[in-house]
Length: 220
Image (cartoon, rainbow, N blue to C red; front, side, top):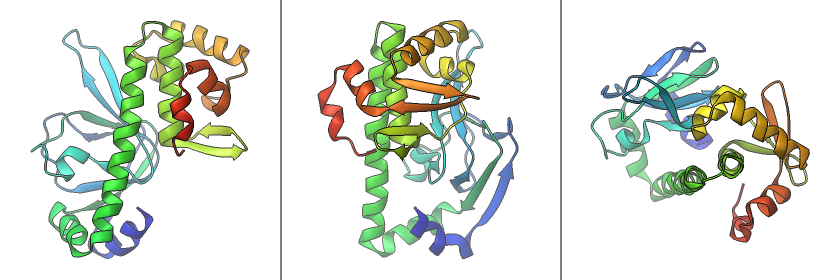
């Protein structure tokens, strides 16, 4: 997406959104394609009882809202809110699509990004299907490792998102207390470590804990 930004920059503009600020409302018709350049944005929905449920987290290079960008939906399916201070690049959908259509390699790059998002969301769904809280959290950590992980030393990944136990619990449908208890269990097993809402993950230990050898081939 860096090449995209370099070439599209003359045709778009930047905006900043402060922590807690609204990016899009559910049902809103976006006025432009948005590319996150810094910070974290969460997509969420509100249940019939008024509870917020975090659907996904988005960071540097992500396009929002992707279903509208690709013409699958006519509006935003979710609410989007800045978890941290964010910087966003904006460009009209017409200009963005004209840019993609001009060269096949650009469309291939877009397809690769979409495939990565698809794969990560399958991991997220797998986590939500688990019956035990510990496995829910484990698979969700793998989803975050896949989407926001940065290898800081061989086999050790830092999740480049500041996650409170409340926000993490919203991702998996658990209370803050249950999330904190199970996070401690994973830390005691040497799978994760955390301080100041920042997590590091031992990838091989997490894979062994999840018992999913097929994940070892995933490119993070």
